[in-house]
Length: 367
Image 1: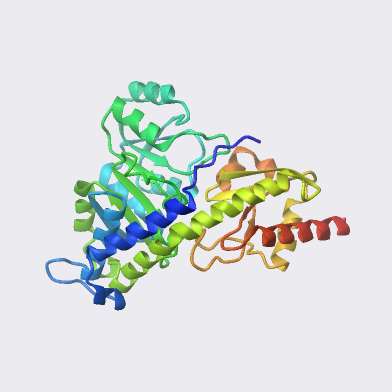
Image 2: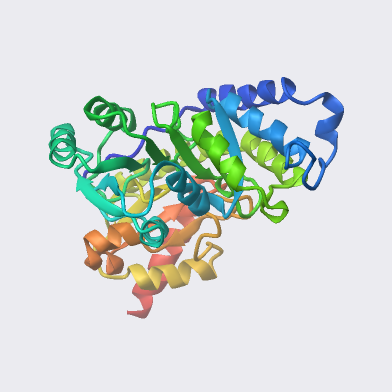
């Protein structure tokens, strides 16, 4: 099967990104503050912890953006807040034709937004839809693939939309940020959103990066003391962003080796193996027989994680053997019985091959 996974940065590029994060930290924090857990509460005149404000400046520097904001509710609420800042209820949002990620669809419905679809894989279709629908007020572009056939380039999609009409664009960078060379705002979007939990950070903290005019409005609305990201959480976000790029680049290398080994026929009974962003960049394994669901049960007994926590969070160390994503199942429900996705997380390819081999042998011996 032909897929179009996002191009992962190399280990050398990941190291350079790690060094950039550290350099940005030193430009905002005196050394002793990085050896603390930060401050708490709503500082008069700032309405948030000083540590959080400094961490947001660091994140903005890392992504070459005008501003950044840490929010509660992880990536889901980061997207919701970003959309709230650029489009009003009843207005029309441009989205891709492939199935929308389920939590994002809920946000769209909850905010009372209308949607118009364009095929982001086809620049001409984007131009046609933008011309035929002058009511489109903003656009949402998901960085990772929503279906196996998606091949669009984020920077190109943003450029085409902006050429048609200069509307605000929000990008969902979840599962892509710090794995690829540029985030959504670096590609030209007005706001880019992601969960810091997917970058080795704390639970429940999301981030919005981009244009200051939109983020300033969200800061005004986010005045409640209980809504603030506390200083210790902001520091955890930065610590996670230091370690995530290299860990994710190593993971990408393991994925590449796994595809080669499986396509070289190391394990009998496998029809195909390929990489896809579903939503994380993962290994998809297709079996010759409909044994996928049974293999997943056996893999868990052999040490594989049976489900994600935050999709590459700091808790996810062992390889994950899981069903294919909901957006992929929506395009082809039959793949549930013949295909699984594997994310090696922090493991090596030998561990993944061993668990996969033994799981298949157990299923076949019982059939």
